[in-house]
Length: 104
Image 1 (spheres, rainbow, N blue to C red):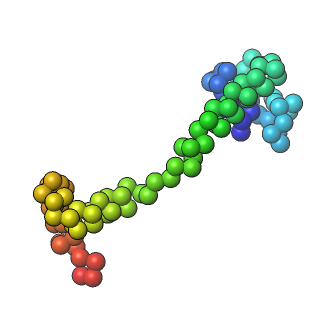
Image 2: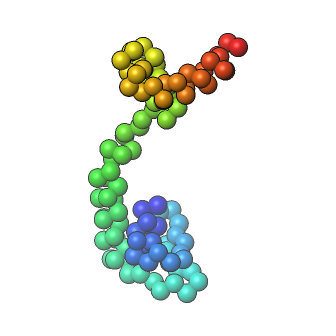
């Protein structure tokens, strides 16, 4: 996959195939001008460095938006000071909960 990303960073319109993640098996398709192996390898280093630098993005997994809103709802529901601060949000969610109870 890193080979594909590197090639497409060099030429976003390139058409090619390769096998077993081996740069030596690249076949250029549909008249794509071949890219020198050294250029692809250099771009692969850049692509890998960019991927490595964004590890925090892959590790930073938040609860779903629904779960986040549910946590917010419960925090507001348990704190009367927050109820007045977030009145519109609280009342809108409360109306849905009252109309559609879990056990109803």
